[in-house]
Length: 184
Image (cartoon, rainbow, N blue to C red; front, top):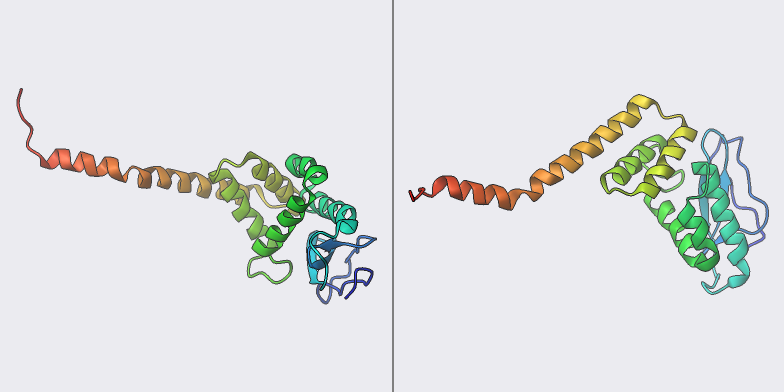
């Protein structure tokens, strides 16, 4: 498919599919976003696009930023600042997102993906991703109970990490208990 061709529909029975006008290109892929109960980026193979093809840069970035706006409610500030100075980084971020969360083909539903991503962002102290996933959760209508459970899981993972990281301390304390104490 060439740059001007319309990408195929994402799946049967998705009546609210919305194509963003103009050429969309991400590396060697063309894309469109679907909008209905959930907005998502759909990538389609597109051969023979050179990575250095800067004629596509502005439509690529506009499409990527628009997709972020649709799926998260806003463009993360770092991505907005990166777009004019390093458009390839923004494109790579879109590729990475599609790799980690394959549109329409993944084993996990979008809500579960958001909850996992939120928990990982919280556990890794990634404020920007936490904000983005809170926005996505709001758009997806994820219940408060599910969001709190994701928070509790992240907190438990971090608590478990502290205990796991304390293994050398536990070894030293166990050695102290085994060694006879010497009176002064």
